[in-house]
Amino acid sequence: MPENQGYLKKIQKSVESIANYYGFSRIDTPILEQAEVFVKGTGSATDIVEKEMYTFRTKGGDLVALRPEFTAGIARSYIEHGMYNLPQPVKLWTVGPCFRHERPQAGRYRQLLQFDLEVLGDKNASIDGQIIQMSYDILKDLSFKNITIEVNNIGDQECRPYFKKILTSYFKSRKSQLCADCQRRLKENPLRILDCKEEKCQRVKAGAPQIIDHLCENCHAHFKQVLEFLDELELPYTLNPYLVRGFDYYTKTVFEIIEKSEAGIAQGSLVGGGRYDGLVKLLGGRDVPACGAAGGIDRMINIMRTREVKNSPASSKKQEKTQIFLAQLGQLAKRKSLKLFEEFRAAKIPVAESFSKDSLRTQLKSADKMGIRWVLIFGQKEALEEFITLRDMETGVQKGIPLNKVVEEMKAKVKN
Ligand SMILES: [Zn+2]
Ligand SMILES: [Zn+2]
Image 1 (cartoon, rainbow, N blue to C red):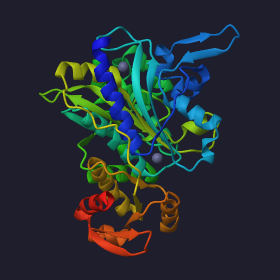
Image 2: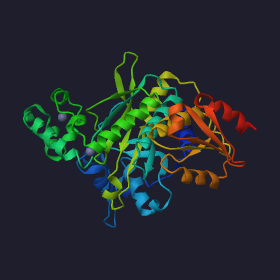
Image 3: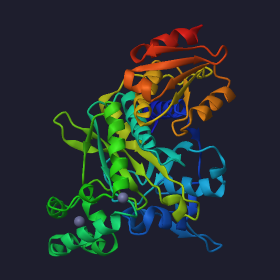
Image 4: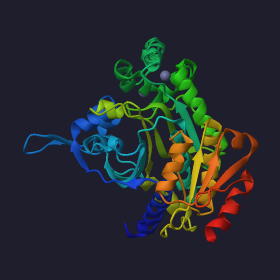
């Protein structure tokens, strides 16, 4: 409606400006896909595919579906266009309509608008941290107050099957107390019972075993790293051991950003996402780890309207040429540089990075190729001693700068 257009524009601008800043490219996948993409990818036993997806046969006999979400279509596109030949990770964002046949409800539309962020081709926990940070930034940028991040790790192929067994036997012994849907889920996907909104199921769920106690070493380490990133970024999060999300493809990290009322009661989630390391392979591609998030724009508009958010979103004016490259080595430096990166963003100074490449040589080469003059080197020693090494690529001269002075000093350099 006309009165919503201003809010829609603000949201789109904010998403675009943050996505651009973090080096994401825009993609637009078709609204209509082969139904198989979602049946295989999103999961045949999920509510979204089973109950809410609009599916129909074309005159030619193809079974197609209106996309109920973005991720499966983007993964399909990644495979079809051989994007594993591009430098990894591939970072993509989009915004547009998705379609779900739901019971009519205030603020819920069968054609719903979403924004979406995806990073394909990187298994590092820093990517999970970055996706969560960006989702949070978008909401902050739009002046959402009382928001909190709920996070969980739902395991992977190695540890989830065993957890499913424990969970199944727990629910089996309480089968009569579950709703009809959950009794069926017990066979197909017991994890989804944790997601059920029925009150009777919520009661049973409260005593259920928690996956966090059954994670394999790999998932456990990954989860720990993600939480360390969130700590470093000073993001407000809580662990929700029952958060599973309504898609089958998630592995390891899942998260939601929840809006709370003044009284602290959860109003519903605004952004949700997680890691999906198995999806690309499931859809017939290579073994490509990935992580992403999607946000519900309709709900955001409704909240903004009721609150009359006046603050304008981050400027979307054309970004200046990047003159700084942030090279980092080792976990500690990576973690701390994520925060530094965020400070640069707040100061509106563009910074290039390659969060996933490990050798300093590779990183310096990238900077050189991009024609960047100033390289900030953040290694193990620097991270421990809270300083950063600045290298002038033109003269080769290096010097140390205390970590808390870096943004200020670089601001002056870039201006000159
Ligand atoms: Zn239920
Ligand atoms: Zn695991």
